[in-house]
Length: 113
Length: 116
Image 1 (cartoon, chains in turn orange, purple):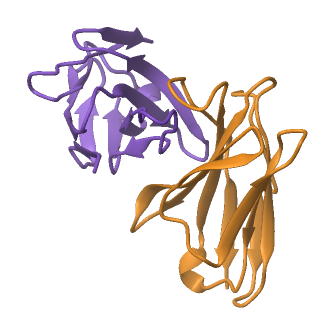
Image 2 (tube, chains in turn purple, brown):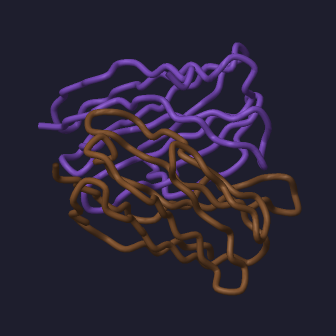
């Protein structure tokens, strides 16, 4: 158990819909990362937040957004969903903004039908 | 930009065989290097890491040495077990001068299958 908690574990939704994935980082960790894992793209970094502020952006689509709240939990919002958004979405956390080991949650499986 | 290249599988070995999974990287500075493992139906777990040249990371019988001269971080294990069957990801993380980082850059993963 990494200490990173993600909900929901599985989610099935229709094209065009919007979903929110939730992440609670390890106790004391200030950085939260979101990654997408799909068969064709592999593991891709989406976005990083540190202590409530966006710190780095990767291959995140404009239809996707994220935020980190004062209690340090984070949400990834996916809107106007397409079939190709079906993937495993990982949240990860680390103590500081960089230079530390990153610990991953078990992921949220999103299936868009 | 940064990139990680690793051998793609599946790699199929018999139990007690010697394992090597190759990993090479491209980075502009001095990254930290990691191996993560993903067991079926589970998330990513950190297997081992090395933060500077010539460091050796080790865990659960696995080892990898940070080779700056060859920009490599090959994963090795002397005697694999069926329970080692999983997908293994090589990754790097590089700090930027501004104090930020772009998280981890992953290789595409190597599916390892160990047969009894």
